[in-house]
Length: 112
Length: 195
Length: 140
Image 1: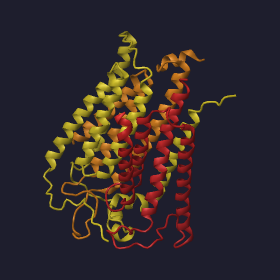
Image 2: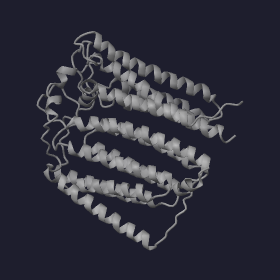
Image 3: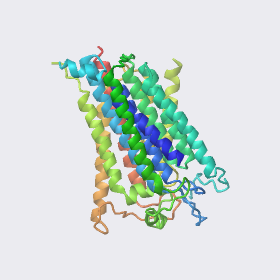
Image 4: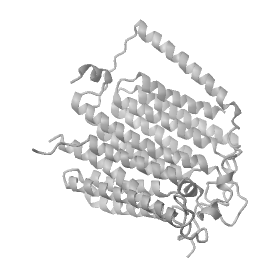
């Protein structure tokens, strides 16, 4: 149970970063940290103690395998997280070229 | 020509019992939390990006311990690519102005934030009460996928069989999301041609 | 100087490793997404080593985005072919499944792995090339 609570603590650290930081790059880093904690929580739920990695050995039919369903979900989620991070980085480069700063309060005030 | 994959550690007895696995992952998670807290409070942006690498590569070690080699490969390559992109962006300006103001509004906001976090924590402990401890999993939903998977799909990699045969729609959606992201980046970073 | 001589050899090996992981996606851990990302990594290594001024990058980004679009179109065509043969269900696995454990088994999963691998490699390469072109052409 402590592992799940530590995962949630990592999620709260990321949430704190998204709320209180003013720099765009720090916001992207904190969002990425939140996503990592959720990936770990999903894979932890599907772990079985004496199970092997989910590659079936056709010769021993009675082997217990680790649950493959959360792993498939997390595989999709990792690729989606890469796509969103790439879009956020492109947006922040554009904002930096236009306003010469990464600070979100200055960008809100400048309004070129 | 038959091919027997090298991924069958059949003679490898599982030496990490439940309490050992929980302790190991808790220690690695502790390192990840320390790295995350440093990444948020770092003054230099380049140090923050490198500290995000700690969290990412610690996650790779956790995936390898939890017997998910497919995820470990994807996570390590994606984390490296993300770090390269972020360092390429950050190398223009590596300074953060930190304005520390301890007036009354800030203290009220911090206390309100702590109350919200305590409430979220309480609801989380309520939610995980019915979870089995680490290592025991009833696999109620996965029985229908795993039971006849080798005969129905023909592939001995269960994760690939689930992703590409039973759940092929989700894979198509994910490919389309990557395509839209590439299209969006191309549109955002367009330089007007010479007139 | 050393980097420019060693990098093509390394990038070739990494590309071959990525193709191996894509092709054996139904036998060993890996599959389309992991292999595609590794193939993109090989090309990114080449770009990082030679610098952005040594290549004609506008042609490269046109090539990579065209490749990615064609691969996504082939995935959709394969899915619709499952609609025409067999049980009138989208994504029906219509090729014969051999004995599990061989390289040519598991219906159309190897074909899917190949096309999705090409698509993922093209997408990641397009994102990276767009960034490099933007940084280079706006600092002239």
